[in-house]
Image (cartoon, rainbow, N blue to C red; front, side):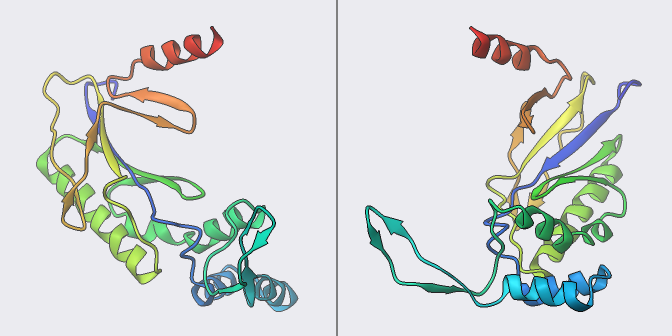
Length: 196
């Protein structure tokens, strides 16, 4: 971006990511990650035959079976989710990927319509991957930010599931507000306001 280029970043959002993890697929992916024998049996035991109930004001609901998912607030949840999507990089032929558990963004330098099409193709492959792995991207909560200082950036639409992704002027990412023009004024103002 030092030479006036732009980088388009697609911020993704899964619908109930931790709840949708298919246990059968996860066990195959654990096996493919060289987790075998007693350790694989331990993970299988951890995942299978789970039940839950809801407690509200001394009232407990009936117990229900949990056929999919991992506990999001647990220590194992983010690790198992990461193993589940560890092969996700196979979707990306021209763009790059940054992941932290279920927080994922794909990005690419954009200098032509061909670059836009390549990023769109990677996004479509990501959606197909999610369908195969019983995950669901939520296009309403996904967004696009074009980073750079070009006077006339290429502002092409990106689509997911037939919906154009909303475009933003900036985004909060892992606690830091990133402005599309690469300025940190908004972030600094927010920090000062919190300190006051």
